Length: 306
Image (cartoon, rainbow, N blue to C red; front, side):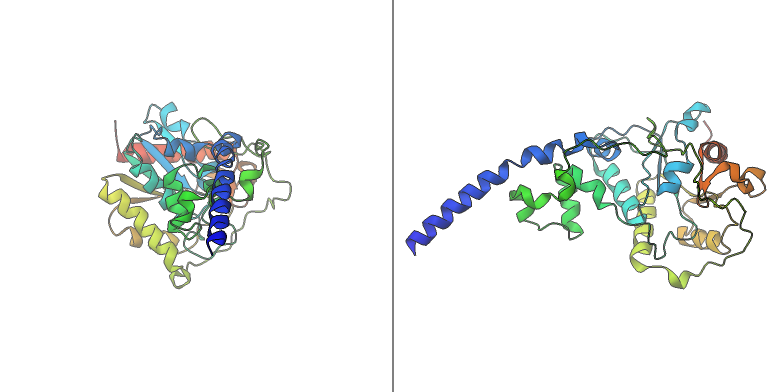
């Protein structure tokens, strides 16, 4: 028995020593990323009066720099393609909790009509954005909270913090469709080859009974964070290449329960039915994003005049 325990202790010591070699892999993972905005959040380097959250609709349809360019406040975009409301809530919470970040005066949540609170094959919590940043304890704590890491093991065993993406040692390459601007936005500078350029005039109806409880909880938590921190909240609905879903806007207003404002674009603008201003049926291209953002800036400035 004594011999077994000795061997076990030697093996454990060797494993832990070997495991510590992977600290280098873990700590250099962020340097291989193209998108380092979340790292800025964790480092407490966010300085903007307006923060934008959302999925690709927020990243690509809102050009944050145009707030300051119009003589308005500074703005920064923390929207992530493929992310859902659970990820947006995490980003806002992490931004507010991390020492050094400036508390924004206004938060803009860009929502997906009508997938925001529904089942979606394209929107999820972006764990792939967290794994490159597991060197940060706040990230590990969030992974534990969401069941991706074990509470104690993850603090002592470096290998348990990593997944296959951490071992891809080549630097990531930028997207062929967009660049990440210094303001965090990702406007698309071309049009999708398979885009159907015929405007969809069909009218869809929103059904709250199809909402998912966990997404609804995250939405309510997001709005509560704004309310408790005295942050102005704007829910922005960008254009699709179709009409707005009937009942979606009233449902958003109902969920806000008096705190926050819903911004809906001017549906009479000819650009929003013109295919030349779209990348695909759900995203504006750069020229369309400029027009939409300018509308949003004007709406914001009316709520918060200088």
